[in-house]
Amino acid sequence: MDKLFKKNTTNQYIVTFLSVLVVSLLCLFVRDRMDYKIVGYILLLVVSILAIFLEIKPVLLAAILSALALDYLFIKPYYTLHIDNAEDAFLLIMFFIIALINAVLTNKFRRMQRAIHIKETRASTMKLYNTMLDSLSHELRTPIAAILGSIDTLQQKDVHLSIDKQQNLLSEIEKASMKLNYQVENLLNMSRLESGYIQPKLDWCDVKEIIYNVCSRLSEETKDHKINYLIDDNLPLFKLDYGLMEQIIYNLIYNCSQHTPTGATIEIKAKYDVDVDYDSHTDLIKKCVITISDDGYGFPQNEIDRAFDKFYRFKNAKTGGTGLGLSIVKGFVQAQNGTIKLNNAEGGGAIFTLEFNVDCLPINSLKNE
Image 1 (cartoon, rainbow, N blue to C red):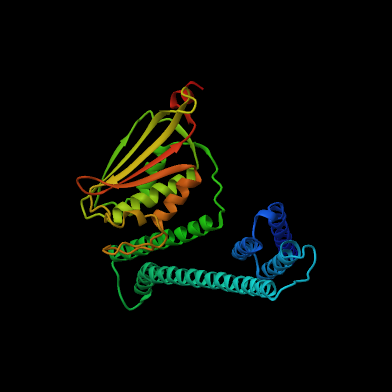
Image 2: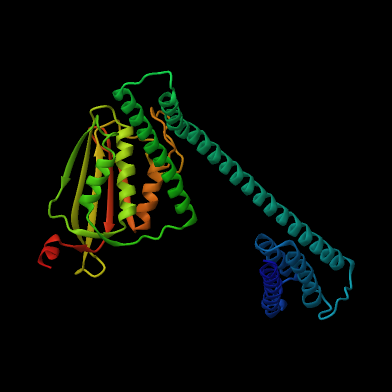
C-alpha cells in the first residue's frame, strides 16, 4: 500500500512539472505578442486545474514553479530572476500568494467533500443496517418463538396431548423451521452476491421440473391460492444453473403467495422463444422466457422501481419480510446474463418476466439418443 501511495505521489509530481513546463513553453512562443500578465492568468488557471485533481504538495510545487517560470521567462529582463521595478515585483508576489491560497482552499474543499461523502455513506450504511436488524428481529423471532413454544408444550409431562395435537405441534415446528431456513438462505445468498462469489454452473436444466418441484415445496404457503401452469409439454432443456433457477422461482412464487389475498391465482408460464440477431441479420437468439404473475394487489406505482432494492419494504405492505427476496432474484438472474422486468397488470396484480439468452436442447433429440 505504501509503495502504491509513493508511486502515485511521484506521478503527481511528474504531472505537475510537465504541466507547468508545457504551458510555459507554449506561452514562450507567443511571448512577444502577449502581455506577461495574461501569461500569469494562464499559469494561475493551470494551478487551479491541478488543485482539483492532485494532492496539496504537488499543487504547492505547481504554484512555486509557475511563479519562477513567470519571473524567469516572461518578466523583463528575461532569463533572470531579477526584477527591475516594484510593480512587477508586487505582481509576482501577489501571483504567488493567490496561487498558494487557491491551492490550499481547493484542497480543503476536496477534503470536505470526501468527509461529507464518507459521512453520508456511513449514515446510509447504518440506516441499511438498522433496517436489516429491524426486519430480521421480526422475521427470525416469529418462527423461533413458534418452535420454542411447540417444543415446550411437547415437553410438559403433566399435560396429556392427543396424537392429533402432537402432530399439529410438530407441523408447526416444521413450518417455522422451513421459514427460518428460508430467511437464513436469503441472508447467505445476499452475502454471496455482495462478495461477487456467484459463479453460475451452467448445465442442461428442465425448467418444467424446477417449477413443479418448487411448487411442491411451497404447497403449504400456496394452499389457499390457485396455481395455473401454462408450460409447453415439449419445452426444451435450457443451459442454466439449476440451483440459482430454483431459488429464483422459489422467491418469486413465495413473494406472490405472501402478498396476495386468500384465493388469489398465481400463473406460471414457461416458453421457448427466438429473436433475430439484428447485428448479423441471420442468427437467431434462443430464449427461455418465464412469466410469474398474480391477480392480487400489484405494486404501488410510485414505488415499483424500488422493488428490487435490498431490504426495501413497501410503505403499505401488510405482511412482514426482510426485503431480500426480490433483490436476490435480480442478482441471480443477472448472474446468468438474464433480465427481469416487473409490471402491474391492467386488471390488478404483478407480472414478473424473466428472459435468458441460452442454448437449448430439444427433448426429441434426447429421445432419439
